[in-house]
Image 1 (cartoon, one colour):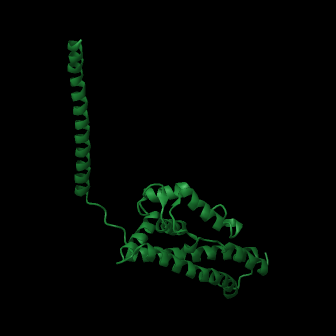
Image 2: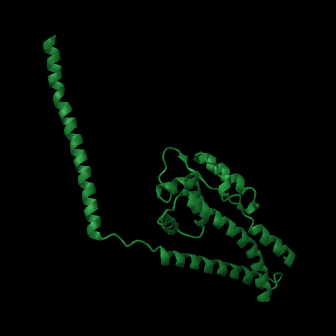
Image 3: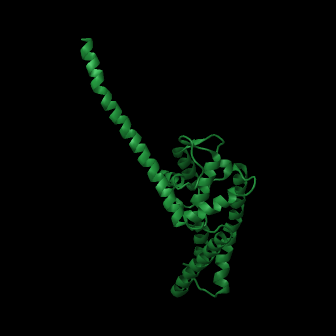
Length: 233
């Protein structure tokens, strides 16, 4: 691979396409509609991204893990769709727990709502376009500043390793920032947990007891009803 081929590869590697907030209709959408919308946009970018589809399982898991706001019925609002896009964008680098803390942190801001979330997503998208261009420049400059010859096998491997190191550094910075402002919640006290478990068990036992009593009462009423029918005859 020569320098020109390397630069073409870099351009292709950063040519991903994401949904913009303006691509999302104001009407609520079913899961299949969201997936198609995302897939159509994905296919406008490099072929290497075609298999990174948003799936129904992913969306269901986001809802199940309560990373997105509760879904009413089978349709998702624009705000929930943008929440899904946030998670999809970050999940390759951050854990679901970290993403949830980040989103919870946003919603903890006074007056933060769906409109503010859209503005935040638009800001991210705009900056990402600039970073995409910046990444190609950094890739080329690294070869020059480190005197790496991309046609040399050892330098080629060293280049790959340093791109990975750069990615790891950026990931570590992002995780450190989340930990600093949005730390993990303190683990629940054992006594509190036991108390909650006991309350849950008592509630379940009470429900089972009521159900059993109702069943026995119904069973006890059956003979008298049959006897009344017999007397009438």
